[in-house]
Length: 393
Image (cartoon, rainbow, N blue to C red; front, side):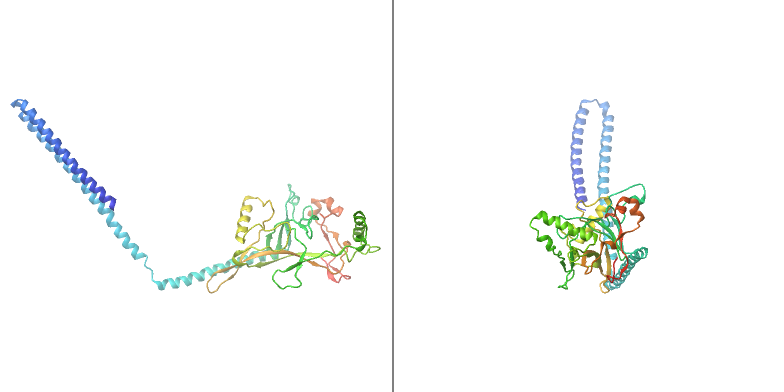
């Protein structure tokens, strides 16, 4: 609005200046014409009259053009100003909403969102129920180290070993175990590189997730009584041979070679402000994320790009809506978490209980490992043993 007014004023000033210039030009032209008329003959009077008429016509046309410009500026000013008032009036009318209607609509919206969130919970339950009906809990995949033209060429629940189990004699209280793709009670998830430490649930504390280390059994005194290290090594080898052959004489190995049953458990958990907590002890690996959201973003990045974390410290752990606040309609989220614990077995479990299983996939993938009885072979044991009085496998 202000710019238009200034523009109109500038046009007006320019017109006045043009009028003055035109008047000066007209006076000069008149003087020149008078001089010319004085010098000309009386026979040229008619021509002088015609020139005066032409100049008068030019001045009249200039005045008409100037008045037209001013009129256009005024009309344009009116066109801009009037619709502005009309739009402002319409906006004032449409934004006025009664407060009573907002309260009713708010309750309706809250009910709708709560219903949709509950349906999402049921969809999650449907997916998990489908997984439960398709098969049991267990391993679905391990790290991929082989590939080929046929599906059975690729690793599934085993590769060079069952569950990617490997040695870590360079770390105390550590069992080597790589990444896993597992299903627990219908929940599918992917772990980080585990390499778990030998811990068991605490026997003295009832605090959530409290655990304590499982201590090694004593070394046979027949070994420690040897004078030199070399003699201790040779004697210890004899004890390992007795354990492998299940020979209790002359070396009764049973109180020094104690079996452990290690297991994986999972649950839906909740933490304050999405804070991420390590589920179990490991001297080599950890979940490389500051929060659950940070972990989810990193997993999305690696999944969409077909890459992996070089440190093998990322895990895919799903999130779900576990509850809906009936008062506020706000969803309550739960984060799936797993951990690996071990449990000391009181009785002996002889190695002869374990026999190679006829797994077709493992047999085609690594026949020499299965037949040779190495760690790549899948082994099972009888369901029940009367001597142990317990379910073995």
